[in-house]
Image 1 (cartoon, rainbow, N blue to C red):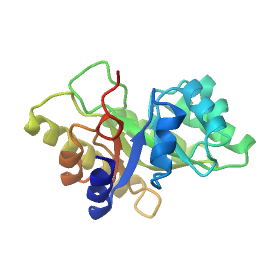
Image 2 (image 1 turned 30 degrees about the vertical axis):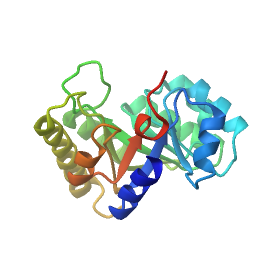
Image 3 (image 1 turned 180 degrees about the vertical axis):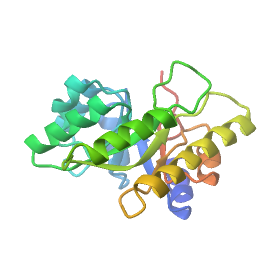
Image 4 (image 1 turned 30 degrees about the horizontal axis):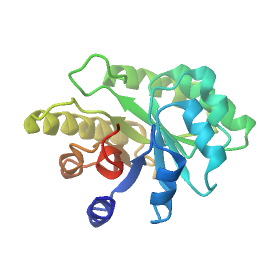
Length: 218
């Protein structure tokens, strides 16, 4: 299934993040040997353990909720943090990026699903956050590259389309009002194993796929 998904994403110019949470190093190496280099993890401890075990040309994405006090553990190597949802977290990422002499790429996570349990900003939150960090502070070691969102776990295709459209609308607003001259602000991370084709049709540039590649977790 991996090769079919890789072809589909490549044909649409979309980045494939292979979600490897709970998967073994051997499972990851099987994909690595097929030239997959971008992997997503949702827990800091598991991510750091795998980073230490696996080849150093892997690009790791943190896709789960991140506490500020854990940024220091991944700052030396993380390629992208997709789940930024507060000013405090951005400040900490910048601080740890400075310590490690790195500019860390991030995405702003938005709450687009019906489930209240999911994390993320709303648009007013994001406006306040961006106004503060772009005009009040010199954050030189964090780079905001776009937005991320998780749709509702549902088989209602129209609901999924609407939620993905809402994230695309948020991206367009932020691009036009805050990042119009910033070429780095270009990513819309949305779409997972069950809905990535819908997400791509609605403008996703990056999909996070686990079970459709690795199989259902036991």
